[in-house]
Length: 65
Image 1 (cartoon, one colour):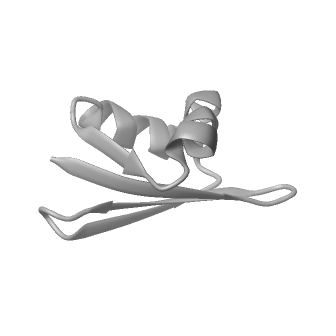
Image 2 (tube, rainbow, N blue to C red):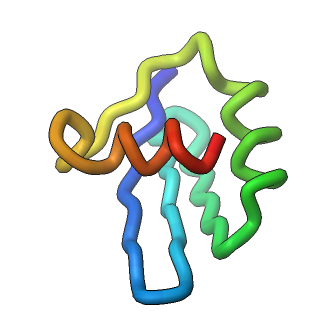
């Protein structure tokens, strides 16, 4: 399964949108590191794809986790 994700970061807030094209599920997480951690743990063996993931989003994800 795939998870397409994108982070948006603001001065005091962050959010991530994760879309799973197989299930057509869209998950929006805003300023909730525990919810992100739970989602990640449930989907960590899947493939995560992000437009900015090599230079930006993967580091945000790692820092929040």
